[in-house]
Image 1 (cartoon, rainbow, N blue to C red):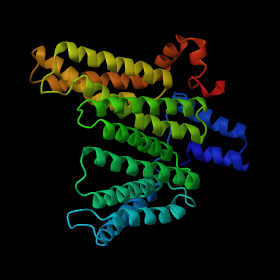
Image 2 (image 1 turned 135 degrees about the vertical axis):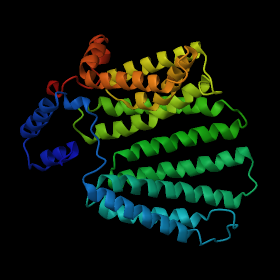
Image 3 (image 1 turned 120 degrees about the vertical axis):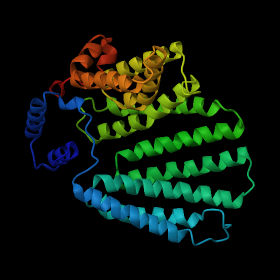
Image 4 (image 1 turned 90 degrees about the vertical axis):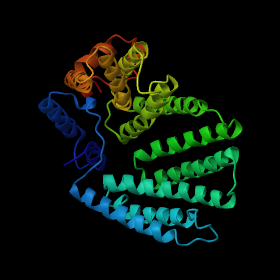
Length: 352
C-alpha cells in the first residue's frame, strides 16, 4: 500500500516521473468516482507491522515510566516522580531514531511523538508540583504554563529532527496551553474564562491550519498532512468550548430554541467544512447535534424512539453528504467570491 507521501518521495527521488504519479492519482480518483483531493488522505498505518510495533512501544514506555517513578529524588510518595517522564521521553526519542527516521512507520511515529512531548510535559509538571506542593490556583497555572512551554520546545525539537506531520498540531496545542495557563494565572477562579480562551485558541489554530492548507491547494505534499492534524486539533477546541458557552449540555433536557441553535451551528460548520474540504468540525460537534435532535424528538413525543430516530436522521444525512460531497462542495465554492475561492483547495486536482 502506497500513500500520497510515498508518491511524493518517489517523484522527489526521481524514481517516478511527476506525470506518472499524476496519472496514478487520476486513475484512483476515477475508480473511486471521487477526486482524490476530497479524500483527506493521511498516514496512520503503513501495514500491520505498525500495530505490532505500536503495541510493543506502548508496553515498553509503560514499563519505563513505571520504573522511572521509582526514582523518587525527594518526591513525596503521593506525588509522581519527574524521572518517569524524563525516561519515557528519552526512550521515545531513541525509538524514533529507528522507527520514525529510518523506517518511516506512521502509527509508531505518532505514539513516540506523544511519548516524547508528553514525557517532557509530565516531567516539568511533576517537578513543579514537587517543588511547590502547596501551590494555589495562580501558581498551579504558572506550573502548567511552564510545562506547556516545555512541550512547545519539545515539539519544535522533534519536528526539526523527524518532521512527523502531527508534530505541528501538538506544538500548537501546547502553545495554546501556555496562553490559557498565563491568563488563568492572572485571573483565577472564573468558570467561563477557560472555555472562552479555548475557543480563541481553537480559532487561532484553525487559522494556522488554513495557512498550511492554502500553501498546498492540490494536497500533494506533507504540508497538507500538517494541515489535517491542525484542523483535527482546532475542531474540538472550537466545538466543545462554543457549545459549552452556549450551555448546551447543562442538565438532561435542552429547550427547543437552544436545540435549533445547535442544529443551525452544525449546518454552519458543515458549510465551512465543505468550503475548506475538511471534516473535522463536523465530527467534533457531532455529539452536540445528536443531543439536540434527541431533545427535539423527545419534546415531540417520540420518547421511546428518540435515540433511534436521531441516529437514523443524522446517520442518513452524513452518509448522503459523504456521497455528494464533491458536488455539494462545488456549489459552495462556486458561490464564494473569487478572491476567497482561489485560496481554497482545488475542486479537482487536475486544475493544479
